[in-house]
Image 1: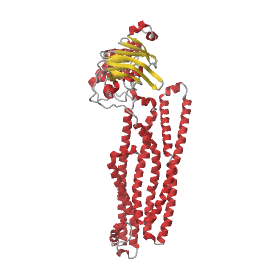
Image 2 (image 1 turned 180 degrees about the vertical axis):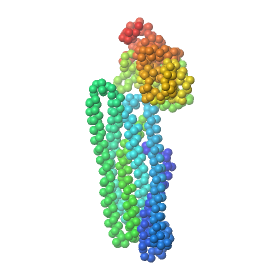
Image 3 (image 1 turned 90 degrees about the vertical axis):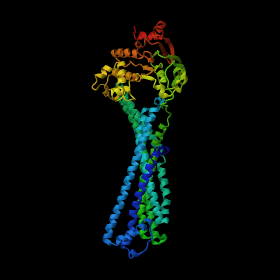
Image 4 (image 1 turned 30 degrees about the vertical axis):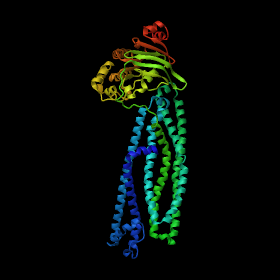
Length: 597
């Protein structure tokens, strides 16, 4: 409950207002119910009009004078006026109930908003290894299913619990005032009811958490299947995929059914126990009335019964709320677990500015995604300021991993990476990444205008946007779009060709005039003509700029200042294009395989 308490605390004043509205609602309900017996006694009793203040509960005594005054108008008018009074009391009760419900709904909405904002911010700050180790569907399930369950089963139950507790406390106080002995009989029976209900709901938390995890796995399976639909169809694996999904879905359904059996058992059990207590109250209360014990008159017994009837619904809600909160605790635990994950520090620092002076240096860097399976093995090399260093090698040799280490998506397992002889992990992350311009192999664009995709985080400066687009040889085709730079490019840039998407991605990398460019197979998605145009633009853009190029097409790196050839996580060759060709080693073989002249 600490998780929920933390997020409700900013709305403490609203909670107090909600409590005040609920108290007033219950008070007006009691005033209406408890006044009836006293009014009827005065209306039809013999000689009561002239009596002093009779025995009764506090509210009936307070209203006694009003009743006597009403009866002074005559029986018929008194009944009419009393009916109007009851209508007014019920009206006030409904008004305060409405205000309480509105207030609690605002609190719930604000808490859900705050938790979802916290989840999204956490997702943005999580380090890349988290996404490497965890399923995407599991994270998406926390945003969707877990949040819905949390709102309904925790916040909804807290609302139900608060309403029930306020009502029960006030009703019990009035029952004790009417007759303490009869009330103690009721209170003695309540622990038995609570024990039975808690026995039913004790295992709900564990069962609910298991169901939530199964559901998140189903989400991952659905996402994975849809993303890989082309492969599934190509290998005629539709029936296999259907059968696998049916099996997991059936298991999820079995566990979900068992959980709901427990949930729905609480209501009939609490009903039965409630009926037993009602019978006990009627029998014992009648005994007290017949024996004139404890001053319990028939009209006070009627008031007691009416109050006891009023206390039954909130008592049932209390049992239901406890049961649902047991179920919802699993969601709260999953949300809290996610929010407690370690994050990257991307806070803006104005005290840590940096420019590239000497350049970058890898010193004995090793890296593994999984323990015992090295991806980079004792890598050492430098990227001098203003120079172009290219990485080549077969798939899985570690090229993109080096780029990921330079962008600080991952940290070396051992060794160190330096910038100007300073470890890059000692530099403010936000400050460091502002040095970089990155073009990845997989182009990612957003469902927005061309200009906002290029400027990305900022309100577009059209002069800079167009300048970056011209360098990327994208200005001409953008100008020919229906709305030019204001054209929406669709989900993931789906309204553009692959070459156009890549050139916008390159323009985005150049928008902030970065000191260090990382080109991870930046031309791999382009056709021959587009590749030629973009390569010309890149050749111009990287002049005097520190650049790391990961190349699949070796024609793009012939002019690099240094080419590193990687194989199984190690540098096996190093030199210029001509030096490596003269060496006649692995690089030369790769060139010949691509028939490079």
